[in-house]
Image (cartoon, rainbow, N blue to C red):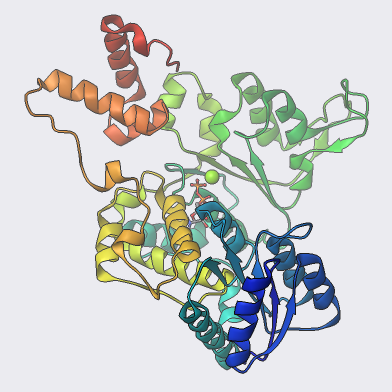
Amino acid sequence: MIEKVLVADDEPLMLRFMSDLLRRQGKDVTAVENGALAIQKLESESFDLVVTDVKMPVKTGLDVLKAVKTLHPGCLVVLASAHGTVESAVDAMKLGAFHYLLKPFSPEALEGLLVKCEEHLQLVKENGFYRENAKGARLIAHSPAMKKILSQLEKIAKAQASVFITGESGTGKEVIAGAIHELSTRAPFPFIKVNCAAIPETLLESEFFGHEKGAFTGAHMRKIGRFELADKGTLLLDEVTEIPLSLQPKLLRAIQELEFERVGGTRPLQVNVRFLATSNRNMQEAIENKVFREDLFYRLNVVPIHLPPLRERNEDILPLAESFLERFCLENHKPLKQITPQAQKKLLQYPWPGNVRELANVIERCVVLDFDPSIDADHLYLDSSLAAPKASYRGMTLHEMEKQLILETLTANHNNRTKTAELLGISIRTLRNKLHEYEEIDPTHSDERM
Ligand SMILES: Nc1ncnc2c1ncn2[C@@H]1O[C@H](COP(=O)(O)OP(=O)(O)O)[C@@H](O)[C@H]1O
Ligand SMILES: [Mg+2]
């Protein structure tokens, strides 16, 4: 139960208002007029609740919050601010604040919050529910497509063959790769990931294979590559199609022979590694367009797994939403919320261009920002251009409609042609031809490259 409360605010009237109110609720209140004093108090005493202003000189409310999180992780923090923006509220909640109060607020608002704090602590105490569930994210699979994949996963994991996981961005490719490693006999050994899209081309080779001291300018020390680090374990080549064509033959050789040399090295090294790879591209096109070598693909694609986009597995949407809700309420120290039937309907109707990752973000935002006990349809921040079909095509020719749809989709996806083609169900090549055609008529689109 909440007994001791620390209140910090540099405005004397506000400090008085909050302290008096909390005292009237029977709390043992310590009031301080700045963040530095609050932190000092926290270093010598423990509190059940801290209510702090955000904007204070020298040490801010966020500093106080951080101090609480390290010194007294069980203590709840409520931030109060007159300069509240959505972003700072989100930041505060992510840092672990229990709630956020916008000044000026009524006595009832603070009293109501106090009740919530008490309820929350009660819940934590009663069933240890929070800690139990905080362990490891579960893999949710309710749709027939995902159930089928899961039913094969154990068998796939036990084999030594390479697995190639395809699917749009955010469909869960890394989650599946992680599960394969965990279910395999290699589980006690390292699971090493290379994000091929994120590492600059020039560094990739030494990232894979390591380098010797002095191998090139800047190589001050020997570096152990990911192939070596993954020995006895699993190496995930994430977004493997982003590897430059020039490095692909070397990679293929290393995968086939399980033997390679560090950059600048002379001695071949042997490893025992299992390979998993992912890509969000259409592989047939990547090969046709000479982005990815066919031989390397066949070597990696011994067992193919394709994850359908979320919009094609509706049965997963609500279970995923529920599971994210539970996780984010927990992480943010909030009582578990409900999703209203209207909100459920909206979730089910939305096409989820960013797939599971987008769903997770939408739910996290709701938990962080929304203080109601339930999540309703208007709490969901969805891309409104997709949530409800707009654009009237009346009076247009079929050709004009097509052009408008293509250009709109392209804009909505930040000129990502792969994504656009995928969403429209056409090949990249068709998309490129169409764009060429529009360019010839209207050269303003000519800055878009492949
Ligand atoms: N089936 C699932 N069950 C639970 N969480 C999932 C599932 N699929 C994806 N996620 C979550 O969605 C996010 C995106 O997944 P990720 O594997 O990174 O996607 P990808 O690699 O395909 O872009 C992650 O936060 C992940 O934990
Ligand atoms: Mg990924």
